Length: 331
Image 1 (cartoon, rainbow, N blue to C red):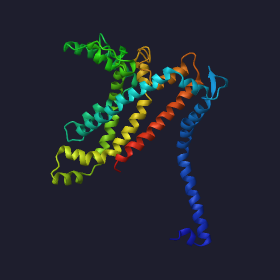
Image 2: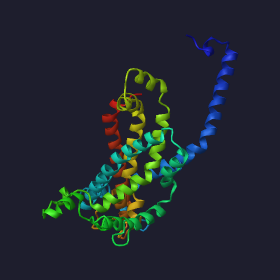
Image 3: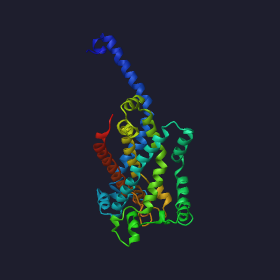
C-alpha cells in the first residue's frame, strides 16, 4: 500500500517531510534533559571506570599504565574469590525467600480484609525506612547479650547464638553438638551473613509485595470463575490460573532481586564490626570493591577493575536467568 507521502503532490510531500522533522525535533527536546542525565550519571562513569581499570591511580594521582595487571591480580587474590562466594551465598539466601515470602503476603493482602490499607502500610514501611535506622534497630535486636531476640530465646530455654559476631558456617553450627568438623567450604555461609540476608529480605519485602499485588489485581476474574465452574479448588486456582498469569511478574522480581542482592553494601558496612567481619565472612563483592578503592593503600584503578568484573558477573547472570527461566514465562 503506497504511503501518503509517495502518493501526494511534490508540494504536499515537502510539507509532510517538514512536519515530520519538526515533530521529531520537538520530541527530542522533551527527552533531551533526561537523556543528558542518563549519559552524565550512567554511561560516563561506566566508560571512565573501564578506562581507569587499565591504570594505577593512587590518592587521585595517575601513576602509570598497567594494562590488564589489575585483572590478573584480582584472579590471583583469594580474598576476591572468597568475596564472590560470599556474594553468591548471600544471593541464594535472599532471592528465593524474597520471592516466596512476598508472593505469600501479596496473596493475603489481595483478599478482602478489614483494615487492608493498614496492613499494606505496615508491610511497606521497611522500604521507606532509612538504611541507617534499620541497621541500628536490627543490631540491637541481634545483640548477643542485651538483644531482644536472644532474650526471648533464653526464655524458651533455647540456644543464644552470636548472630552478627558468629563467623562459623550454619552447617558447621548444626553438627557442632555432635563434635564433628566440616571443611570451611562445606560449613556454609556464616551465621553473620545469614543474619544480614534475613534483614535485607525484610527491608525489601514491601517493594516486592507491591509488585506482586499489581500483578494479582491484573488477573481477569473471568479466569477464576471459569475454573471454579470446572470444579477447581484453591490450590488448582493458584496452580493453573494465578501462577501462570503471574509468571512475568515473578520473572521480573527474580531478576531484580538477584541484581540487588549482588549490589548489597550498606548493611554490611553498617551492621558488622569490623565491616565485612567477623573474619571476612560477610565481605561481599561490593564491600571488597569499597575496600580496594578507599582503604589504604587505596587503588582507584584496582577498584575500577572490580567494578567492571562485578558488572560482567551481573550481566552474565542475568542472561543465564533469561535463558533458563524465560521459557516458563507466559506472556
